[in-house]
Length: 301
Image (cartoon, rainbow, N blue to C red; front, side, top):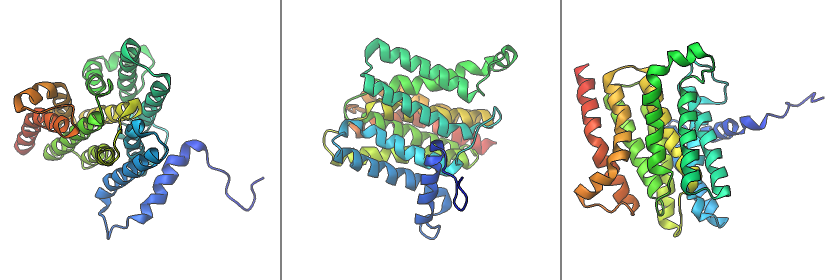
């Protein structure tokens, strides 16, 4: 039927095809291969922010961060069906599902108890997915010891980012948390892949924040908050489960501590969390001690 030409590609392959289209635009003579995903995440986030502004959807600027992050993730991993043994490869699908859930929440106008319930279910679903999506009772028993810390890893970013602070503070906080994760994993001696993924997530959030600083009236929306929260948790969990070392666990905990303790750090440092810069500095200040410990542990190893 399609003799002489390629058959149409399934819709679910479009993100990877878009990423492969972008790849030749950035030859390694311009940007080293390891830096291309963060650069593309940043550029795609800024471009999506401008597009949303042109469409009169500035309150959805967080969707720009989600778009940039998805392009970067599918650029790294392509499109593949994951198995229980594949940890990092689960991240594009995790973020895509979180973005879709956030978009649905934006359309339904979820608030209050309904939003809290959806966020709780999202945390449980994300933890279950990153633990290999077990269904049989023996498999559930096998992951029982890891279930609680992984669930906490998802609950903290969702708890801190999803309620939707004013303006773009959620994107700024998420970008700072991802920067902590990237720095901590690098200093802990983690595999290069994981700090690179965290840096791409930070770049996507930063792109939305910078574009929003120019475009007055921009906000995050649930799509961006869910996407960035799932990225923080997913990368931390993937690194921690793939490399079972104390320095890596400390690095994975740094963004969680930064987000959870940011209000206290803001009071101690005299920062206003209503502004994106103050929110980001509070997260960095609260999570930096664990990054330092991860570095010391990595040197000792």
